[in-house]
Length: 169
Image (cartoon, rainbow, N blue to C red):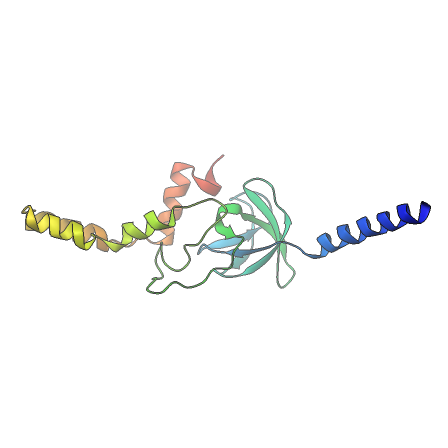
């Protein structure tokens, strides 16, 4: 009976050790991501993290994650800037706000809705507008809106002003 109990304890210990060594991975999916000294957007930057950078999860609760970079730096990243799946470039994806870096982040994003917003009118919608005589001036204004590019700094300012994402209090 004692051998069975000892065997069970050793098996449990081996399973726990195996889980400790199989650390969870995360990947950076947002341009402008920085490794922070503390769990705050105003904390000191320890490193700039490019899209696709692999991270090892050290602590994973809440909006901020404690991670370690492949070169051994420990710090904090905002959970919405990383994913549990490695980013891959999409066919036809640009480098803009909703380009190749738009992946399944830990804060769920409606990827299809985002993609639709940068594609412009569908062929069906364009045909409808033509059939119903949409004025040329309105089409030109819509083209201007659809051609608008938003920089990372503009997005950051918007998030900060609105206290959204990592800027929420």
